[in-house]
Amino acid sequence: MRRRASDLFTVACITALVASASSLAGPVVPAQQSNCEIHTNQLKAQHPHSNILRSPWWFGGTPPPQPPAAYRDAPSGIVFYVESDGRHLAAIDAKGRLLWVRNPFVEANLCPYRSAHPYISHLDSAAAHSPPTIDANTWITNELYDEMHHGRMVPRPERNARFVYLEFNSSQYGYVNISDGYFYPMGQN
Image 1 (tube, rainbow, N blue to C red):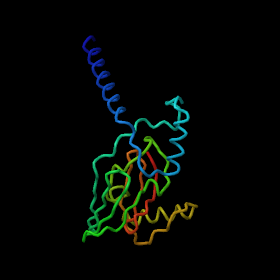
Image 2 (cartoon, one colour):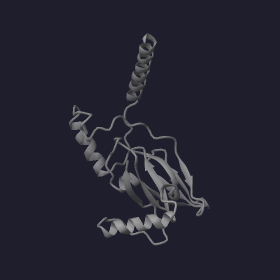
Image 3 (cartoon, rainbow, N blue to C red):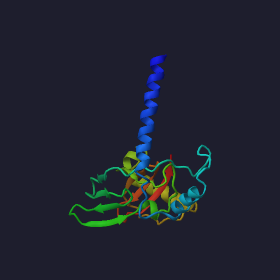
């Protein structure tokens, strides 16, 4: 029993040191922010003593973006690269030409969720995040058409559109249209 208490005390001390060290670094604030992100963070700043267990605007610390990530779409040869700010996504074709650069979080006007300033944490094949019984791109296009039929206002993807899966560190996720870089948010966990 005495050893368990000692171990718990040690873990608590280490946790406190790590937390204080990360808070000294200060928050990482991206240069571009969505309107919702600005408004929500201003509201949180105006009410700093709100109950963190019940407040929908509490996000915790904002960790710095991970090292830049890249994903290569095998059929097209396009490389998708997350820039060092963790917010911009660039597409580079097989010949090394820059096709587009987009800021999915800002362009979709997403609101913060679990992180005051979310960054891109994961890029992957659309097939890895869709039902295995149907072509991923067809499934995503059909889902988007169905949502547009029910009132969602987003650009209509072409029938043969191809997509890449994108996820933020806040667990918000969606699909990026390979041809133009438009990000279709699909939800959050």
